[in-house]
Length: 627
Picture (cartoon, rainbow, N blue to C red):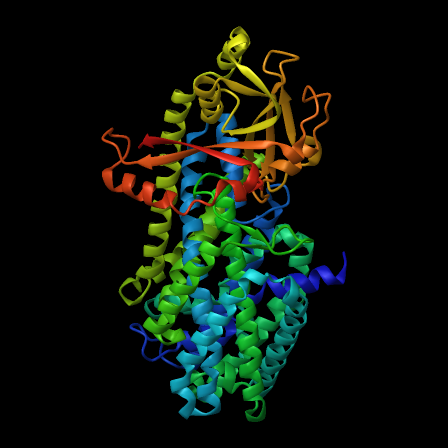
């Protein structure tokens, strides 16, 4: 395994979780918290021990050692688990798999909340270091944060390829520095190393449960970004991510938390900003700059993750077709989704100006993180049961232990509902409603469209029976259709109203598979529709959910022996059937969901651009359907 892969993984995967030491301990002991944790030696040992063992159980055990062993053709993350559940549920007819896939969609919806909160809390927490350097600069924190965020989102269209080379080295420097500062703090009070014993975490939970339970709502901040470790597995591989975590990231974060704990033991007043106070005074301004760079990288990673999740959701039918730009010729995973980008920018700026501090945002952050982690754990154990055929008792034992830990964190964060935890739940509920409404509406429209289109084979037979009344014109026509069972509306209109057809006709259906990418040899399936030499063929083009379809490029790979003659792709005409949606009176969905479905359809990307069709040779024929 190349060192460059590990360095790349460090720069992209661990940005979020690696910047958590900036604000976690500070939030736990925040005196303005509705349920403050008193500063005492026993509580400091207990909190630091809980942080260490929470990271160990949730990140190292749940994600690195377990979840990353299950992938969908190399891809990880909650969307990959959903794809596996959908595939297995369809094959086995298991209703539980379908229900869990829906639960997974809510987990993916929570990730969108995470994507909005992470840039806000990360950059705010870094810039707040200016108040440690010079208290009078406190008024500049929010404006500087807003400027950084605007710049960050404005450069997304350029992609991360150009700046990706420096992400790894900057992140490595970050972990080396925070680890070294942690060692300095530990050297001042080595007794803090006792917190590595799980007895302090257990003792704090059992002996001071009233305090420890509420503290969990802030301690969970130490595992923010855990989902990114799993989601980015397809880009870097399990081995690179595992080694980066175990050899550098986890030790550096643990040292930072221990060092901060030692600093608070030395002087309880240090709870105001233990991370930056751990740095020698001469190095605090450079540390603020380094922390800002690290949080920008962390934000970049979660923004890219949001692009990826939105793209995969659209491919699986949970969102309308979105305009997607690939920003790298060498990496398929680097994409830019304009609609998602500007939505995130508006949301992040709103959060910055509304909450104005990382401590206030922390209450909201934990809910998104714990919800996603809990759902991922649940889906993992269900998939592991049938994928590995593991004994029920083993799955039950492992799931019980890990889900108890996850649910304890969820329960603690629910106590913060009135203080901001409602925000990610609202975002997730909105995204979940949008995605499930689109999926339901799409099924209704597809059923009505299939009824109007009629049988494709019967339509081809009618063309054969009425050849004398239909004029054949030279050239190639490509009709995009949803499947091979029904006739394209555009082709039916062309034949029935214009009484013409082209010498060569390709009816093409694009099929999204629940795998990231489809091998070239498995890309197309060709059917002559029952007649050998009529010049009409049906082509199924199969793409993975992480691929962007390119119709002309796919057609160029076809040989003349299977298409009943040369297709003349460079001069071919492309026909699309455009459907205008209207809210009807049929009780297919609630009236408000119909309106939401129709409104959502307006963000659908232009079909010609999405499928790579040449605009000067694309004909769009319209129709309308009531939902």
